Image (tube, rainbow, N blue to C red; front, side, top):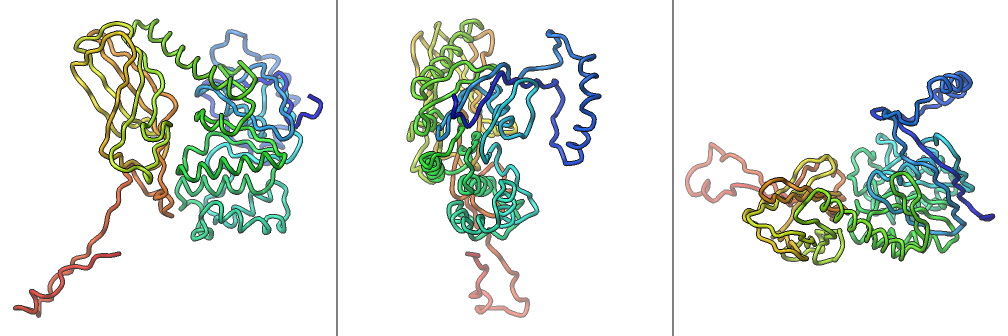
Length: 427
């Protein structure tokens, strides 16, 4: 493609298992450059064999072009190599082989608050991020009010970012990346953190960015976002480029493949059933907006039963990002006949802190437990997470009030003492 703004050719990235790649300071870059000839000859002597099990290829032989103004969605399972690809394009890490050429000023949003200094205020981080993008102070000042208004953090803009909640950092990071006018914008699964209203605003902003002729590469597990925003998609599978085509048809193929893979895995394991798609009943998506929820909450989990199940057990749990179980439920004496079935999990309320959670489902057929991880993850959102001290929150997102009670004045007695107020409620 002659007018390609991103050109990727035979890209590969290999990691050593158990080795953590660290970020480089300037002195590390200078040292690496000076020792490059020595490392080259050492590498030739110690190059691992193809069967070396101490290495893993996160990407292998990936090639594609992206033209100016294209909005391209990137699909794939967890661990497929999507984030590694964007990190190479953003120059956060370097490829093992092949190359990626990016023509134009690039803005990236690979993790929530990436590039923010926790000790600096929101205001200072906006100017720092703009300077990193190569913008002049005057340009940043011109966009400053618009960024703060979009992120909805005007009350806390002079507060150190370390005191921001996850939602606030995400909103500010996205606002900076979208408003400082990069020619290329890389977005990696960050919209699931914010509330539903802000997600819609982000998608609308990315649409207007694309209409302005800028290029977007967008990673998301939420297929409805890919369908809405993208005309083209790349399917990354096991480190390779499995397919490149129109977003609508590719998303349909991807969802069908995920369901088929689950069915094959269940059949190979001789499992009694397999779980397919799931959704929050009220919205039909994987997003639960606590601010919009009225009354009970229902989660619909679709499954296909392969063989009769008698006196089985059904265990479902919800885990946070640290793999900690925050809720679980066990059902005994499960009876199912072959065919489709929908498990409906009902809650009176679900007062969890906003964030991304994962469903873990297990079924016991009388002999063995079959376990399944349901994708995509459950995204819980709420505007109440915008509290400036959000980093102090725990698992629960419940309202509470504090009441002060003062001892009686020892000098008071009789009816006057009895009529005095016992406490003061803080508003």
